[in-house]
Image (tube, rainbow, N blue to C red):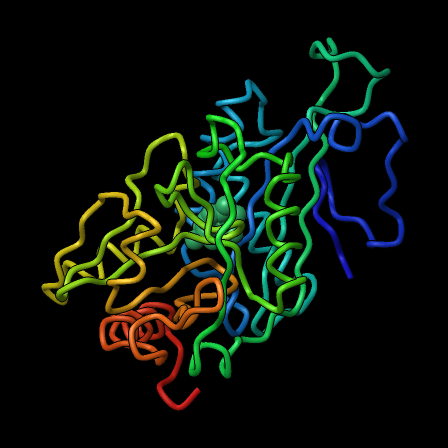
Length: 282
Ligand code: PLP
């Protein structure tokens, strides 16, 4: 398989880094995960825009222009003759240099991007998934898609140990998002989700959910809900580029409403499939 780097394409096996690399030593970098359906990108503009925003927020220069970025990402799929459902993982770090917290001078960024298979989670999307709740112990700049993912990793691992798909994160009971997805509550026909402040990652799918809701005449409130609201919720769901629109039917061992995916969640799933160009019988 071919991997895109800051300068060229290389064979995956040929890509190596010095051990003094700032992504490895400091998590000093940013990343994106872009969904691919039958060999075509979904929401690529949203992802590329967010990548440049994240990079700018940590004073990191992306090695090429946005225009080149689009071209090279397309080439990556072509070179690999990738025609399936998958994802492109792309990361940019501040480069390789002797270890020192301050930025190194005269060192260029390291970049790599590769494509891999990600089958759609059809069974889970049909039945819904279970979650746990965990305190959100992350920093104040979660809108930056930074490589520092230790709190997210710890929360997801706790969820996994409880046979759960995700951890719903909260600050003093106020729900922010999940460890690697955005989360929404449905009550009396309206959708509620944490506002796109610095405290959450502004999900590319989240942008589309707002549009789908508007198109369907479903009120979309950027208003955080609280852990205690979950007991009274009609529906709960999460979104991400790899999980799509995923119904949540259980939180901390208690069922959400009657324990089956709700109507508005189904509406959002259908809107997503249509938007992503996925055939109805898929
Ligand atoms: N929130 C977090 C913390 C994430 O890591 C992700 C991405 O995986 C999301 C939300 C969802 O973002 P997107 O819809 O752009 O995949």
